[in-house]
Length: 152
Image 1: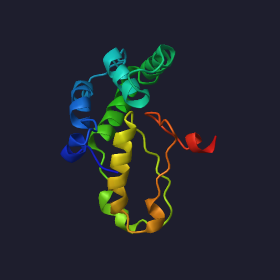
Image 2 (image 1 turned 180 degrees about the vertical axis):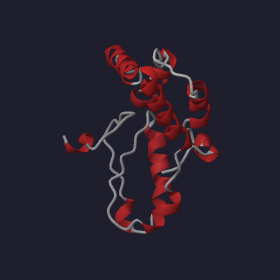
Image 3 (image 1 turned 30 degrees about the horizontal axis):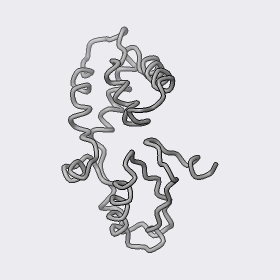
């Protein structure tokens, strides 16, 4: 619910500005880039963020190859740049939470379960409605989570 703030970083969240700005700057050009593909370092960074540094090698290889294919060429560079800008510059939801009155299914993720519980307990106070204050987490949350983790 936060954004890439200094406070969030002090709580252990990633630094989106530091992580993305170099690639954004490198990918900002009016020149045609038909041979562009994301670097292994950038693709592996995204895999690390999404699946964890210790994910299966086969999963890592699949996603690195998929990202290189999906973000290849001039159009791919532009899409990758926009995606990186969105990650870096996303805004938070704190200012809007007071008005949420419907039940909320929180899909929290973290490689540190203790941090996850700490962070979710702090966020509950931002909601005005008791209905929105429940937290549901699977026993071992993955780094990337979808509704299917709760529906299967």
